[in-house]
Image (cartoon, rainbow, N blue to C red):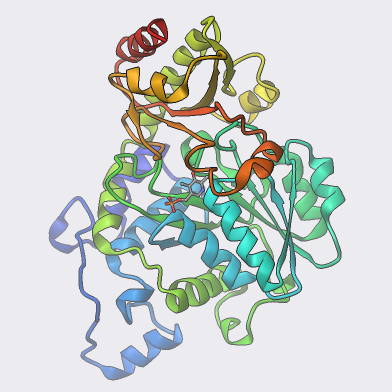
Length: 410
Ligand SMILES: *Cc1c(COP(=O)(O)O)cnc(C)c1O
């Protein structure tokens, strides 16, 4: 990145010739693109010329966001999708075949966990391991393992994967290393520095930041050698080898599946991304202050937050990330009903989202992790009384005050 993080995001639209000198990339709603020379259209289809063929494969507004995300992640190319889940599903659909094996973190976003269960029924087997220790990942590798998938800070219990060592292991075994960077965002952590091959972000969360647009992205860091990957289809070997992976993800995932990010949400996300650094600094500062307050409160029995000294990966988090992020989970003292407590919060909103400017809270076992059942919840370390908090950018005193009054009344 030529400039600092925020400067690069703010000024990237002006690097390409932009219509009417507008400072934002305009919103291009056209589905079709007409070519005065029909030969040019054929070239675009074959990938011999740059351009757009049909809105499902991309549009200029989304392409501008893709280049912003590539800058943020220091990648060589990005494909955007309608949601974060579409980005994950498309990556797997595009790159795996029946008989392949994947090692995944067992501490996963709930819907990713459900999706991986589906792939298991299709013949691509996924093993789940505790990724806080690289040895667990190493033990799960088999001759047919193609990929390792981890999240940075797990939601909701905030376990932190052994990201550096897992990266080294993947290089050693020539495995595609996929890091879901949603919880940290490229401002707190760049998976490329730990040798990630592909970085996934749910743009819906911190990057968009305002709870008004869904989106997802897959970024190729340029580190994986696709000529060594047996699942690249011959017709996609026309581009230079560095582009084989992302081209196959675009073709199989975006074009064939069709979970396209439209221009309007892409524009909203691009605008939100301009303040990513400012928002995360503020929400992470709030989170640290609140975690310390809650950890010292007699009615709170447990606070899971990487910024606290007693977090099992506190030191690792300090080494890996710029700060400790804005997500935490808490358990309340016996006898306090978590629903009653949430209803007493006046400012904090009961909501399933995270990464918003507003502070949001949700009881996990009864909502997001309800479908998987008590046994899998226990395996993932999810207590029945666990409450997840996504901390926003409110004024710190207001936030602490709200939790103080709700706990006093509990
Ligand atoms: C929210 C989330 C996703 C899915 O993103 P959507 O945009 O909601 O589809 C994937 N991974 C993680 C870690 C998430 O928090």
